[in-house]
Amino acid sequence: MRAVRIDRTGGPEVLTVTDLPAPEPGPGQVLVDVEAAGVNFIDTYRRGGVYPLDLPAVLGSEGAGRVARPGPGVEGFAAGQLVAWKEAPGSYAEQVLVPAAELVPVPEAVGATTAAAVLLQGLTAHYLATDTFPAAAGTWALVHAGAGGVGLLLTQVLKLRGANVLTTVSTPAKAELSRAAGADDVVVGYAGATPRARELTGGLGVDVVYDGVGRDTFDAGLDALRPRGLMVVFGGSSGQVPPFDVQRLNAKGSLFLTRPTLRSYTRDRAELLARTEEVFGWITAGRLDVRVGGTYPLTAARRAHEDLEGRRTTGKLLLVP
Ligand code: NDP
Image 1 (cartoon, rainbow, N blue to C red):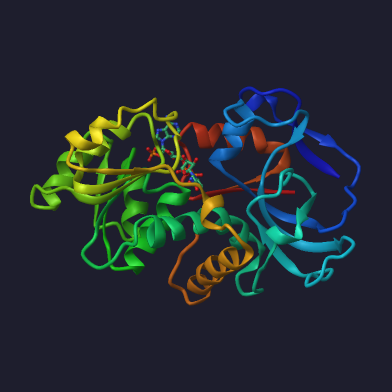
Image 2: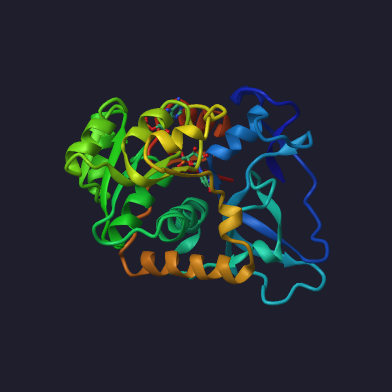
């Protein structure tokens, strides 16, 4: 089977397509024929060495496809069944071994493409808007990178919960997409975000900032918050936020700061399935639109990473074997 492997960390040029033997499912594992693999920012952090990997390694963690063969002792999954997963190392490949505990059933009405496009980013949008900060009618939220994969989904989930949403994007075309996802107000460029947040809230500041951009947006984001507001740093597409003096939370008015990860909001199978069912339910009910911004063959994985890191993409990127 073909797979996208790295032998060393580095830029997108380290991604190479290789032929590997088909994997054998062990106890508790399921062999899946991949129909689409999700490309996520975390794959670029792993490729670059920000999050260490044992090398050589097949990249990727998310995808959807059909069960080829359940391993010994696996119950509840049968050959041919449509499934998706957010965390199975080696998903940039024609076949991957997924731990049965990670696998979620996908309704045929959702389909493999949408499932691969929504699982990781949709679950992220779900926990950020429902649990990290339980947004409700009257909430004002600032979402950076509003036309990105997480950004488009998070904006929609916040709107489903009745919140008001201000987003930032880097181009007028991205602003159009963010508005179409429901953003009440969109600022092009980060510099205008804090003044606009204050204008929209009568000078008070927003209740919550969702920041997946990190280094370039974090400082100004603190100034956009109301007293006792919550800063949610969930990623660092511009670079990670440097070490932080907690006294600044005091000076800005008893602010809260969190750095959440999806893993701690899908702590057991019941939580994973409950969030997934709600996200798939919104899709089948036509309440959540999943935008695939680019589909690439495995041989173009390098270009997918270059486009994502080059800020040229909107919505979700997929690799299709
Ligand atoms: P996006 O589709 O949002 O792409 C990243 C966007 O960040 C770009 O399109 C760009 O939008 C913006 N950006 C700003 N500065 C830069 C820069 N210097 N280089 C590249 N991009 C930049 O990616 P994802 O939706 O996959 O991920 C968004 C963030 O969410 C990432 O930081 C990721 O790590 C994080 N994440 C965190 C999770 C968690 O549980 N903690 C789970 C999933 C994702 P623009 O051009 O409009 O500014």
